[in-house]
Amino acid sequence: MSSRAILIALNQAVKDGVFPGAVLLVSCCGEVRFHEAVGFAALKPRKIRMAHSTIFDLASLTKPVATTAAVMRLMDRSALVLEDTVSRFIPEFSGGEKDRVTVRHLLNHSSGLRAWEPFYKEAITRGRGRSGFVGSPAAKRFVLDRIHRSRLVYPPGTRSLYSDPGFILLGELIERVGGLSLDRFCRNEIFHPLGMKQTFYIKTGAKRRGRFAATERSDWRGKIVTGQVHDDNAYVMGGVVGHAGLFGTAMDLNRFAQMMLGSLRGDDTLISKKVVETFVTRQATPGSSWVLGWDTPSEPSSSGRFFSPRSFGHLGYTGTSLWIDPEQDLSVVLLTNRVHPTRRNIKIRRFRPLIHDLVYREFIHDQA
Image 1 (tube, rainbow, N blue to C red):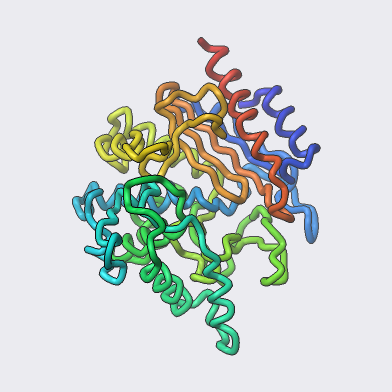
Image 2 (tube, one colour):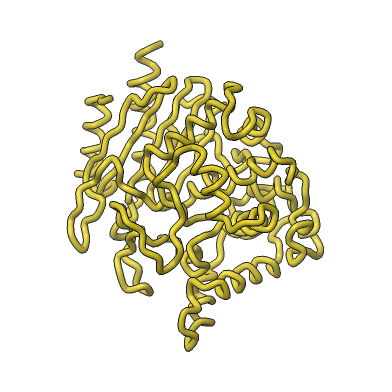
């Protein structure tokens, strides 16, 4: 399960300061072909070696692995269809163009909602003098209310703008339709059935055992964030939301990837082939590479030059990614802590396509 060239590239990236450490897992034709850990899970306050079992803040990988998968499960139950309006389930999100926003629009980032807003700053201000407000259900309701009342910045379906608020709204919709909190729904319906024992949300203020990769030093939290969600909006909302907050390991993400590939082959897996095919097929949004909850290769792509047009994947802000190529039965999980100790390090942007190209040459081209 080792390739010298890939391992050399990972270790060189650590030396070059691309990230403190990383875990890379490559699976091809249902077999794990590479699974290595390099560097450090933490540099501060003390150095901790990276391990295969290190648990990472998956950041926006939450969107496909938790939120999107939950929507797929609800669709398989016929509890949702893509053309359902959001206002059907969340009447607070209505009025004007918002009445036309559908589940499909949220999933492919064409809802008209803004890309991002610093809700956490408003929540911190609102919580002054109110002990325990940050991370509470009241803070979550406050942010959701801000999204419900927000104005769209373009008509739904006319363009694509990657939107965290859109996936926060999807998380709320899943809770209302599924009848459970998002973390419990995902645990019961996705993670437990797939054997993803080290994939979970962590509520703000809660403690969880395990070896965690450290993320950024947060000035307003006054510490290096480890074992708590890095995303500030997710943190003030309690840690369990649709756009970020999920933690997991490389091996668990591989289990998820194998489920997706199995579904596309027609195997009897967690989600039907019909639903998975719908979600990973290009949409009609002008100028967009987004499918439903997933991205596809564009020019240039973090997946490099060789992944097929049928491929789909996603990135996470903390330095994580998952890319899946069904034509080659290939999945690549790259987990890093590139934001430790600061998000100013953006060297991973050049490294991601290079490592995916190397993986493809090692495991696909050499077998052609």
